Length: 276
Length: 281
Ligand SMILES: Nc1ncnc2c1ncn2[C@@H]1O[C@H](COP(=O)(O)OP(=O)(O)OP(=O)(O)O)[C@@H](O)[C@H]1O
Ligand SMILES: [Mg+2]
Image 1 (cartoon, each protein chain N blue to C red):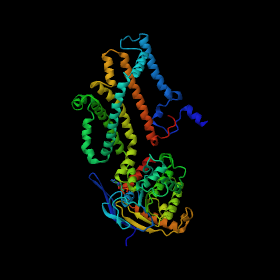
Image 2: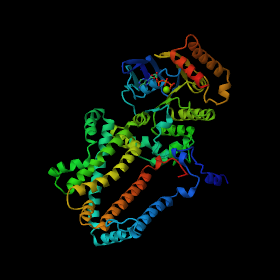
Image 3: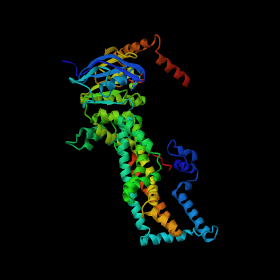
Image 4: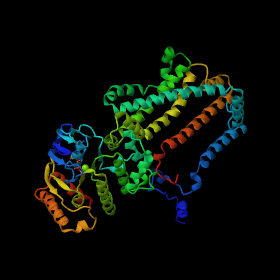
């Protein structure tokens, strides 16, 4: 009996013209139903690529993804991928309400209560009530992200794949959204794979944290996060076990970077110096 | 108070559009009235130049006579009938051409194989001057409506195809990916995501081709056949009836203006989502 969501020896090589770029080495991980897994990794190591392969949006070069015993070859109905660029993923010609209604239209899922009623519930769930008739560009970044989450929930998925969902919102909104997402995860018994480069966020939210190495990335380590739930924005972060887990992960991340930076990192540093 | 200061200094509510550079500080100059004032002034100049003999010519009647000729022509049907015939051709050609253009553009923008096969052909046909096409086409389509509708549709199709393809190509892959992750089929994605996302660009093409359609209709009527407003202009010229000639031109100008205005209103409704808040227009 294999896991609910299993990633089996996935690798991905991009070919652009004559150049090839090996983004993912062999990546394998098994994820149980209702588990919350965070994926940590340095910028450009292939986190988005991995998540999009799991989502069935791009094919792997080798290996396969299995969801509930079936191979994923196209986006499965009960799995939704939330793009890293959430502001670009909202349909600008649709209001918040119509954006949230999109998955229902696609699924032809208009039985029972009216579509409008159901959409309003999802909008309320993410705290966007009152903004349902606004267009995405009338919303702040944090509100756009809430709208994107509401739309993903409207598809009633069992798996939510989130790509750095809070990296572009302000620090306070980020804390709010993290708690909101944990509530929704618990209430809907979702399986979540969350990509992030924020160690704090990964430890705070996840059951397990998988750390990727630099390109071609493989899973460097998997850490169990045995913090009690429900987790509290402030108290959990101050607990000794939280701090020691965070310490351990940060240590591994930084140690890997210390000896001999990769060419990418050198470029980033130089850019930073040029701008600063 | 803050609002009033903003008004006086002409500070836009938005961070700024390209128009900011040329923005004047006199709100009155930014109303529609200013545009009309220039037209009225030019027409007055026309009237005076003819009445006061600033311009002495058999073929330069005062504007007031042109107006009465227009009035007469519209009531008697001498102008109204050809105008109606021209409009019917133009509208048929425009509708056929623009719907073909949108469908073709969506296909070319999404199906790469088709793009490779068809685009060179389109690029070869596009620069053809339409009047050059009319004489050979007469041999196949005759002199009547079929010819003119075809020519108008032909003129309309290219700008619409080009702008549709451009709009489709510019669609962010994130939008398409979003449709896919929700399980949308290809057809659904095309209709519910690609089409609306490309709409601003498509509308730009539709608007260019609207004036193109009017021009093409009149030119085609001047080259071939014996009806329509283009033909009326030629007849009035040959018959040395300048009032009637200008009356027909005036009708075309007004129709062109009204069509464009109607289009803008329609576009505003369709692309309501695309208008950012620019309170200072
Ligand atoms: N379609 C593509 N064609 C070619 N190379 C690509 C493509 N998509 C991604 N890559 C490359 O693969 C590598 C991994 O990209 P990816 O977006 O998955 O990284 P990431 O870990 O999500 O980065 P970030 O933290 O910045 O979001 C990068 O070097 C990127 O340039
Ligand atoms: Mg990424």
